[in-house]
Length: 564
Image (spheres, rainbow, N blue to C red):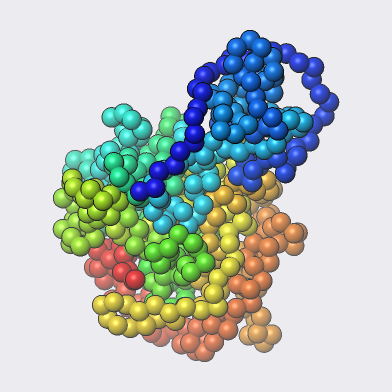
């Protein structure tokens, strides 16, 4: 493994205390501030670890040195190290003073004191999580309620360097002790908030971290050892998450679960529970479902909730770049059955995701080949297995829940509507026109197109969402879809008081992208959503035992639609 050296460091800590005349109104010299620091300019709270480069050596030792090194001291910062290899210091400074610091004539560049770690796994890299981490945003202090099969107390869910668990509250709504017999909830929890500590061993070449590795988790168990549950249990868990909001700063609910849609969301109690939690100020992130191979209008409940952030599944295809990423053919597609709501809202990585293993769980027993050996992240290749691989929109949902935690740590005042709107507006709209996927078991090949009902508003980009300053002055509920067969036009229609409008920031084209909206041939064709053989026709998936049998979305097919 290549080693990185910073050169000789003269480590010291200098307290502030030199007062100089304050300058007038300041504006940032953006050419001096790195792109990954600039999001802090719109929300300058707390402190940030930076490296400040100067045009001349900074003699910051001794009394005379402090007098000659006034910049950081003037701004209430602490000098951590002085570098002799380059004209720079490492410092901790108030984020509110980055602008003033950039305006100092002898400052040439300011950048985060970025982490240097083993290579990340594909999922967090794909959504730009490392850029959030470099700014210090790791979800610290944010509570995420994981309503799932329970959470095994894995060491990667501890506070870093301690035995203190970040699973701060546990309650089971199914009979039995507090554990995760199924293994699904533990995997989801790791994607949200695992810190990768078990993969940070000597010689590691891959860090298996979640998106918000310092977030707190609430374990609300609703799935039994077979991965089954009921509406009442999930509703009770949602209710409990709302009641615990103040006690544990619960800001997010993760629902990597689903079941058939039977009526309008306005009538469905599960859907209404989600809507109520949203109105109570919680971001609710829900899986789209794994039924995309059955065609359009296969979103599961409560992913049909207009306010929830409904997430579809992308494949990273085993590379760190997103340029070759494709949709998973099993990712459920919109619009929603009955209500015709435009879903999913966004897509995120969810195929072949490596996260936390719950030893002895049902999923481990059913899929022993999915257990990742230590050789996956270290050449030493010894020790017990602690990681596991699963696929599905369940995993994608956890990615977005982690993204929301990062955004809320950076700006706790953000409303659920602004979180959703920013994630959608800043999501990448760059997709291929089509892709194919072959099921390794059946050998069947599926052709996927990249329209609004397949990828929503696009591929989540955490760094871009953090950089956004746009505020949703209204509801960000997903629009309904209206099709005019006479005109052959497909329109997204926002409800009254909804943020989506004609302006440049929240306009339909700005959020969903003209390419995604115009790629309607696959949607309007004879076998598509409004075609003669549409999914709600005589052979609709909603009435088939094949889809909603014992191994359906609540059962053992949850979390994987194995696709390489």
